Image 1 (tube, rainbow, N blue to C red):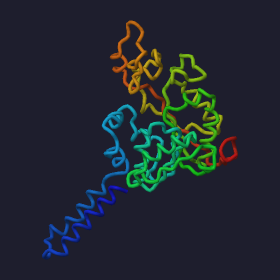
Image 2 (image 1 turned 120 degrees about the vertical axis):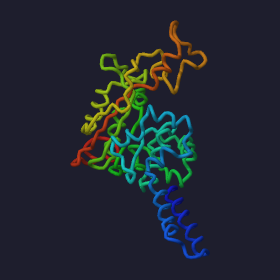
Image 3 (image 1 turned 135 degrees about the vertical axis):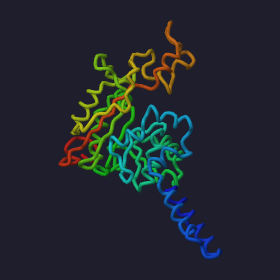
Image 4 (image 1 turned 90 degrees about the vertical axis):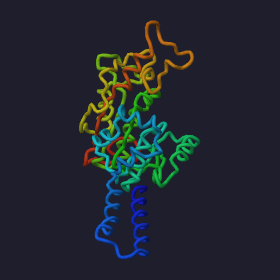
Length: 296
C-alpha cells in the first residue's frame, strides 16, 4: 500500500536521524508518532480517489459518477474480492483496484476473453504498488471460480449485452460467481417507464424494472435502490441516444450533425445521464448450482 509505505519510510528516516543526534526533547520524541499518525489517516477510498494516476478529466467526473457514495451503498469493503464486469476503459478500475489494494482486497476484471484487449488492460494497470495484482478472467469460466467473489459490480453495461441477447446469461454468471450472501451492484442509464424499451438497447437506456426482472430471474433478491446517480434533467430522448450527452458528445463527431433547432449547449447543460443504482444479494442459502451459469 503506497500510503503505508510512505508512512513507514517517514518513521525510518526520523529514527535514523535520532541515532546520530543528541538526546531528543519531549517535543521531539512526539514528532515520529505524530508523523506516522498523520500519514496513516488516509483511508483506502481517499487514497484511491486522490491518486495522481487519475487524470484531471477523470477526477472531474466524480461529481456525476459518485464513486465513493456508490461503492458505500453497495457495501464494498476494501478487503473483499470484487469482480467488475466489462470494465471498458477502466474509469472505475482506477478507483476500485487501488481501493482494494490499500485494504488487502482482490480486484478481478471480468472481460470477454479477447487476448489482445486483455493484454492492453493488464499493461495499463501493471503498477502493482498502486493497483495491486489486477486479475483478468471471464464469467462462466474457470478463470473466475464459482462462489469466489464477495461482490460483483457492473457500470452502464446492460444495454451492451442486450445487443446480442446475452444479458440474462451475464446475470446468471454473476450469481454463480458470488459467495452466498454476496452483493451484485448494478448502475445503468435509466429509460423512463413510460418510454418503449428497445430489446437491443440501441439508445443505451434501460428500464429499471427490466434490470430487476433479470436479476430476480437469475436468483437474486433486491436489497435496495438508490438515487445517488440520478439526473432529473435527463429526458432520455436524445438524437444519438445516451451518447449525445457528456462525456461522449457524439454530436461533435464528423457527420453527426444535430437536428435543426438543437444545439450542443443544451446537452452539455444536462450533463451525464440519469442512472439507476440497484443492490442485489445472493441469498445466503443459495448455492452456485441453483441456476444455470458459471459453475453449474
